[in-house]
Every structure is written in C-alpha cells, then in structure tokens.
Image 1: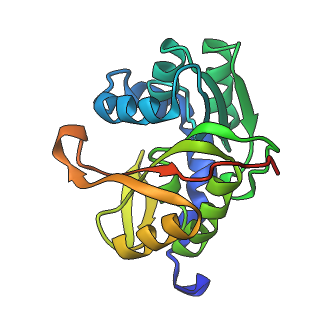
Image 2: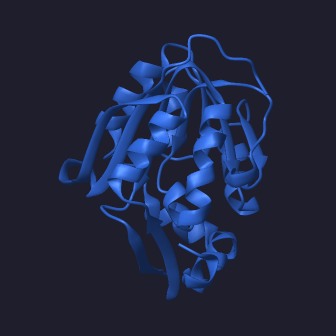
Length: 212
C-alpha cells in the first residue's frame, strides 16, 4: 500500500495518546482479560525474562503482570505522560521515550510484546517492524502482537477523535515471521475470550544471536 493511500489519521496517534493519557489509563482499567495469552507468552520467554514492551502505554495491566511474575520490563512509548505513569508505578523498570519503528537498543530480549500498539502503524511501516523484532530477539524469544482480522484499515474513535488501525493479511504476517526467524506458535482471529483481539504468538528459532 503506498503512503498516499494511507488514511491521514494515523499521523495523529502520538499526539492523541499525549493529550488523553490520563483518560486512557483510567478507561483501560486494570483487569487482565489477556491473562491466558500473557501466561503463554511468559512461558515461552522463561523465568526471570527480560521483556521488551513496544508501546507500553501506562504500564498496566500487561507490564504490571510481567513485573509481578518476576520479569524485568523495558518499555518504549511515544507518550511522555504515559511514561511518567510507568515510572511512578514501577521505578525499578526501564521506561524509554521512542518510536518503535526506530528501536535499536543494542541488546536482545527473552520476550517482545506489541499488544494494541503495532496495529496503529500503517501497513508499509508494519513490514519493517519484523526486522526490529528480530534485532531484539534472544534465542528462543517469545513475540506476541495484535493485528486486525484481515488486511485493511479501520478507523475507530477515541475521545471524539479518529483512531487509526491497520493490518496486513494473515498470509503476509506468516511470511514475515518466517523470513525473520520466527515460528508461529498460535494465532487466533477475534478471540472472544480475549475481548475480540486477533493475536499472534511466535517463538524465535535462532540458536545463537549477537546483539546489534
């Protein structure tokens, strides 16, 4: 999909979460409908794992669940108010400002999470993200992200503003995972036990990996 066909609302995502961070945090809630998937993800990541949370938001409930279960979290987010909430709640973890598309931390992680964040990128920016995932994946690392149920754009609404989402088709996600060394573990479209999320869980197959 060429950039001139992408709905312009995608460019508003960073400022939207800047301006409505407190509302997002309150509306997101602390209940963990994602627990079954998080347990699968953390089982692959292993005990005492280093987790990279791309688009960490306010740190609750997903990063909080990782921390409560003995894992260390490095969170990346483009919203300064969101990161402030994370630092206040979990000062012993690492919270970094940044754009996931340009993430180069120089180290590998046992788990990489891009839950309800990756799907805000337009399709042409989602494809290169698989190189970002690979760059930060330790041997056997877990990768979990959410997407749309099929290829295309979907424009939702948040606080009266347009909220952009996009997705590739399932076959292309599968190809991208495989070409970057990930084996698909589980994929469910619109999982009704998890709020209707479409979820991808994969494991990196590399036996040896150098940080880059």
